[in-house]
Length: 168
Image (cartoon, rainbow, N blue to C red):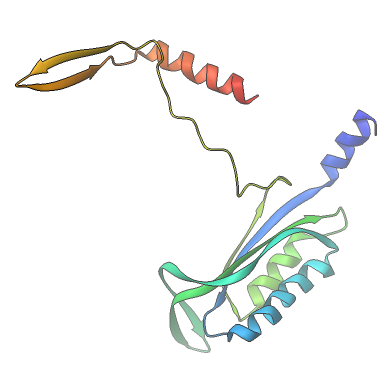
């Protein structure tokens, strides 16, 4: 594949991820049916599923209210899952969003544009370390006290530049 073809292909690809909470009032045996409804919204727009996580019942960080015909019900837990998918040039993300919004079994959802790579297991961020810093040791009341040299702004900038150049 030529470089131009690869660039054209990448500009046509749209990778999205939908994260969702299914109501905890949905029985565990009906959760797969709700996931199939979500997949139907994607299939209708000719989306290709890249990866997904089966929903698991999890406690929510905070209680969420949902209106049901004039009254509210409060939820403290929900089934959380996600689906990463590729949407072709013919697909419309707005229709997927509308399908999710109108599904009464969905407590909350979010649709984001993302990358194809698996972002769940990203590399750990390295902690700033100044290899040239000299540690001064002093004795105070029979205890060893270590005083580290504080880094200057220039040293921090150099370290950041070095870290960024390593990742590229």
